[in-house]
Length: 185
Image (cartoon, helix red, strand yellow):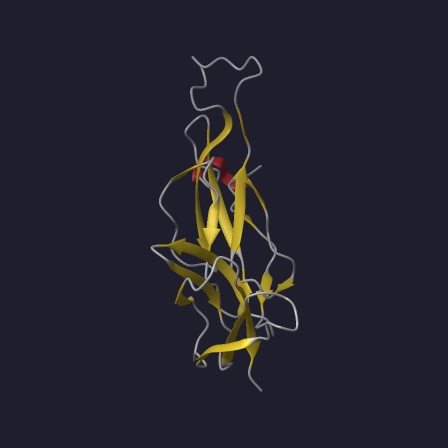
């Protein structure tokens, strides 16, 4: 038995971010701290993305945070450190030594950019998104949703060659301002 990995994206997704949880570990419920100060089950783990390098040893409570995944298939592999101190893939376990893995999921470009950061500080508003590669956008704003306040052009956001974070910073013009990002033809 090895660690379980939960939170895996669906088989095809446009999201380039994921949070995966590795487990299991139990504490409390009468489990003596003297014998198991870090709980029972798995206390730490190491992981790798797409057969890359293994991560450093990570406490079991800390999730795997993936950001800015490239287009294409992805898979996570993990090995857990048991409460006995033995790793689940230790050769001493013989044929029971295993590496846990997720099903493969595929990131594909979407038509809509993914927004993941908003900030307001020092009279400036900033939002961060992952634009679709090769797609330019027009940023527009309005003060209210009525006929007296039409959408106004703010700026053009040029096409980016590769996916990745792109931030736009604007001065705060009023307390109520609505923005939209329009994909250019």
